[in-house]
Image (cartoon, rainbow, N blue to C red; front, side, top):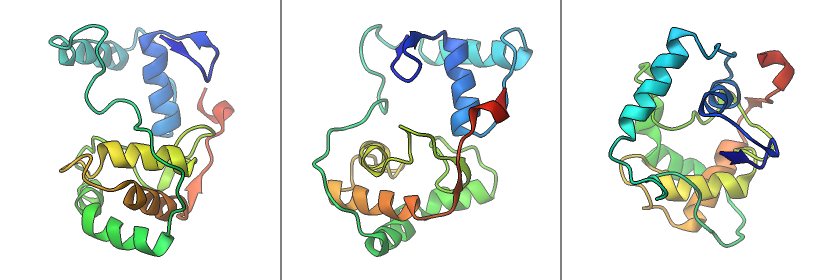
Length: 159
């Protein structure tokens, strides 16, 4: 698939690597490694009933108006709507969506952009009831999450 960030077509394995590196702050896994082979096979199995050319549910961002988020309101919403995921992560239950702070690398053009994070949050969160937050609530949550300490992704550290 063509990726604007790289200005090139990347393989599915390269896209998985980008998730490992950018989203999970991990390191490269060779394409012939059993982990990569298993992930590709699993993704193919998951998508076996997906109609080619149709968007996969949960993928992509919604178009939101430009709003200003409020960190304090975002903190309240996060406590009410996102605490379940935070507890799950603490218990090491595999999350479906990205972490909201700590070791999460905030990449340029990624979740460090409040508008993009708000669009992701509004479309996908909370995971128990996606699309239930208003655009303003999504901006508030994104502003709150963005205010938390986080590491900056440095590509050369993940080769």
